[in-house]
Structure formats: C-alpha cells, structure tokens
Length: 131
Image 1: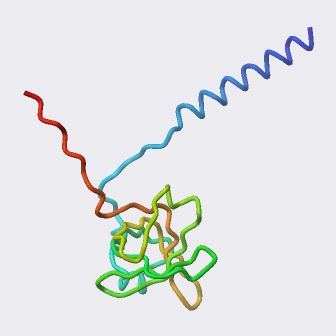
Image 2: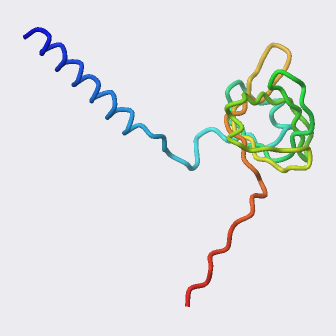
Image 3: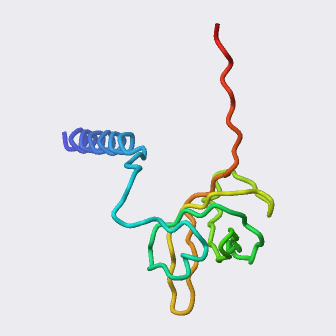
C-alpha cells in the first residue's frame, strides 16, 4: 500500500511539473516601458547598470572569450555574446545586426551583455499572389 501511495504521489508531481513546463513557453509584453531603451553605442557609455539595450550596427572584431567590438554610426562598444545567444546567426564585419541585451557597468567600463543576436537586413519573402 505504501508503494502504491508513493508511486501515486510521484505520478502527480511529475504530471504537475510537466504541465507547468508546457504552460511556460515564453511570451510576454512587447511595447513601451517606463525606462527608455539604449539604442546607440555612444549612449551605452553613460547608461546605468542593467539598462535595456537594442543596438543596430556591425560586429567588427572578436576580442576572444565571447567578447566582441560592436560599431554603429555613433561609435563603438565592447559586447559580450555567449555562445548560446547567437541563435544560429552567422555574421561577418559586413553583416548588419541587431543586438538586444543590457548594460553591464563595472568600476572602469561599460559593456553590453547580449541576450539575442538578429540579422538587421533579413530579407522578407513575398507571398505568392492568389487569384
């Protein structure tokens, strides 16, 4: 009887955990926020720690250890892109990208901790005309 109760409890816990995982598949709000999003490399240099960032420009150089130099029309800033944040996107210094992340403020510098890399000039497929 104790074994049956234990197996039942494990089954219920397992089912509950699977349901919670299934229901939590991402999503959320996209829209205006109380805090402005930093959009230029120049603005990163004066931003507060953990400020939201969305930069559009070019990754110009690898600095090693998941660190890169990013450049836009206002200047350049160092960015940290973990291997799992590339999302299958391959870039060269000529590839225009959008980097989403947050400012990482240290004692002497500010970098961007990138959470997502996207192509900026991704071509849009045109739908076939239906007549």
